[in-house]
Length: 391
Image 1 (cartoon, rainbow, N blue to C red):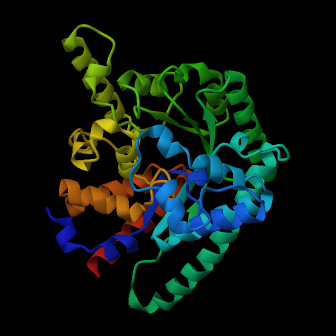
Image 2 (image 1 turned 90 degrees about the horizontal axis):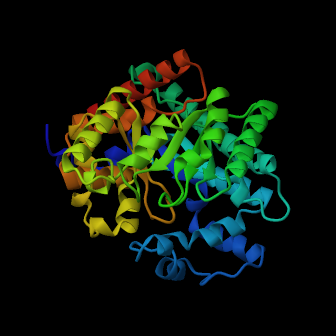
Image 3 (image 1 turned 90 degrees about the vertical axis):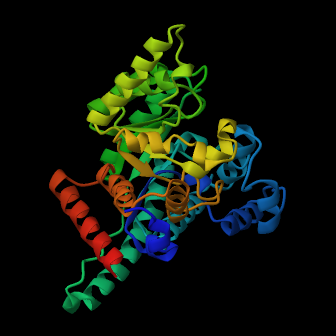
């Protein structure tokens, strides 16, 4: 069934139960909060008006990746305070819920938010405090909604749930990555926090993932999930390294998965076969690709600012597990609803495909519960999804 956009409105998509699996907390502040915190901490901004910051820093279009990343110097600067961290996390959870997102996995690197005063575990605890407070308040509202619908035989609204993803950076010394993950594991165990996974972010070219194999082996042995930024600005070999050497359960972006021209060989036939084998491997093992359309449009010149040039259709044709994500709600000025609408409009996706994209986000989440609890949650989300579409 084609033509989702003509048959289901954006307001309906907003109501659907969604997940955001790839979202950087330090790129997802409220603009008003950034300004308030900068004024409170006496930090310089290019403008103290939202309109001015949208024009100068947080744009709809960027020249290149460095231009895209310049905003993080301001967001990270205002987040080097425990109360600010709690506030940003709290507001992010509520903003997600208002977009119909009921499961979030904000990722961040404590090392980038420490400043001169904070410790890694303090940052994680403060962020969790904000997320937990929002989760409790949101679920009180959801419980009231479910009680009001109890006599209607309506599907139960799933609870709002969150977990943490702790980031290491490719350009770091491997020992720093290992130390960051070890600290995260200790914090998880000591404070009983839903720290479920680790990530490796930063530039791919010149900073191979295999350098951080020890950190990922440590996480693997401590039963943490693994995701890796790969195939965003480098080729299929970067993705291969992430899933073989770093045990990646998911891949951040994966845009260049099908780009055989980026493989270092003079034999086109071998390059093509390499890609086919890699795609098959990812498909069979349901290694999920965390696709961020708007972010890719803003940072990858080869897309020529046209979403139709994205590799998402190839991913879907290959039967891959794909989740639509935001990357950075502030920096990319987007939401999960906007990303789904962009995909639906650009590629004329069917309702069946849209449900797959949304449900993959929930099924392939790093849910902070046991298998049976997660299975029950997935079933609730699927039934609630169907009830929204039916209405």
